[in-house]
Image (cartoon, rainbow, N blue to C red; front, side, top):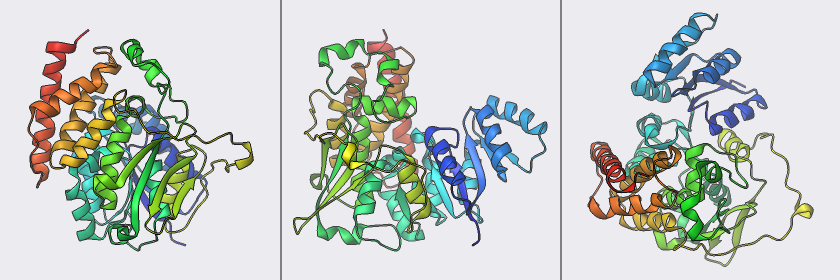
Length: 397
């Protein structure tokens, strides 16, 4: 069998590293490109092991360091720089599969480039879909690019729906009464709201079930991760917000459920291990080894479910509101959240300030239609500037 060729956008992050771990167990793949922003030491280790045709570094100073490292090595890998290079390695002719694992809005253009080029997109960068929404899905229909979600919840829904050749399930959704996204509740599910003002970045990044990067870990702690996933689900599966539900499930064993109109409910279960959805995306429509431990049902205690407290976790409510508004609302939400989370991780604002900043940005900047990438990028820039000014003026500790 001819090796399948893959580009990993964000290979030094958690999803990127787990993708390489799955590839280690499945020899039928070759790596076209690996990319990083600043972590060139790890990128160099990966290049030495996998010998990709290209390595891309987007930070200029880190790119100079990577050039030094590659200059000392006897490798076939060519170094490229910047956002244009990300788009190139996501759309190059030899590439069949693109893992989009760059965190945040920085992965937007390269993700869209992969879809426009008709590549199979393994979508771990939820922010790209949150920001572009209809644009990305329309591009997938036009190019025939299958989109396989890698978020465990959307991947679970994908697995529960009837198989389709192009990976786009919109035509199948007439049989669905609703989908249910599950959420672990994060590290502060049992923490009093009054204590949120004292939460530290270390505490917010200590997720009880999943091992993730700092930004996604904070999003999970605020439940903004679920708010973004709510928006993502509406776009991916062509559903109105009233047909998407969220349940707190602290054990993270059932990753999501699909309720069908005949009364049947299908759920996907598995240990909380990102190698499972990654392996499904790589092997689709077949299944390949993930390296994850098999689920032992006899070892499980009770599985618990409850409705989320939207007063305690307003970020989820804000995500639901953005899904209902559509247009530029999801872009405003995402931009404000990225700025606020970065400020919290830097110690500039309190954990409890994050939803207040997002709420104010969404209140002050009008939601408009989003027919083009230029409008989306302009809105993103405006929201980030407003959020930064707001933090300096009203929220700096």
